[in-house]
Image 1 (cartoon, rainbow, N blue to C red):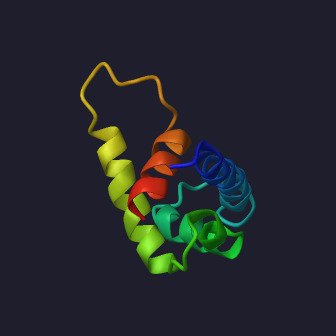
Image 2 (spheres, one colour; image 1 turned 90 degrees about the vertical axis):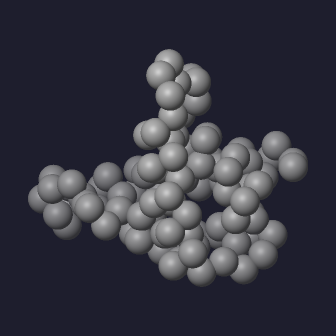
Length: 97
């Protein structure tokens, strides 16, 4: 798996996180977005995730992957590895999605 692909996905996820933070602030008045996986998925797909993965992918599939991936990230045993969420998800996306 090319490292640049994982790095590209991680960079896209970082941009997605930043944009979502602005969305929560401006559109949701600072309220936590319980439906964040769907928002992240739509943004990532609209901003080139398929090109980074090398194949078409739907926002629904990405949203389900993000939801399950976040649950797996949170369920890691303590002490957890020193890997940020975006890097963890990017690596998994490149391998599994």
